[in-house]
Figure 1 (cartoon, helix red, strand yellow):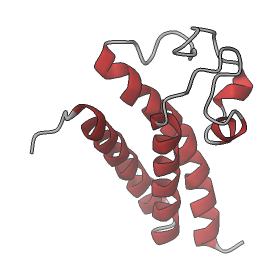
Figure 2 (tube, rainbow, N blue to C red):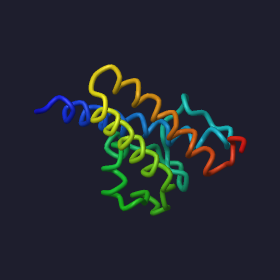
Figure 3 (spheres, helix red, strand yellow):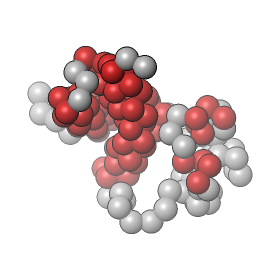
Length: 126
């Protein structure tokens, strides 16, 4: 496997995982809810999510964006932020394999979080 492709795959998968945390941050933080404490739960029925329901992007696609217990819609910001972070990581790994790609991915993930917070809550000044 060529080096840029390997880095793009690794940082893309890492981006989806980081994006899952960033999505929780974007949804919970402005509401004053903890990002670090407590388990992920359905916003509709408060059922704690199983490990299989926390797999970035894949679980959202398999559940069709709904809670499997109550059928409540899952906020699309979750899969959107996960996808954006995966894309940022993959592009950084492709463009700059190695340590520079990791740094670029980290910067890209910060930008994804800031962009999502600003798009939803207008937190950044103009």
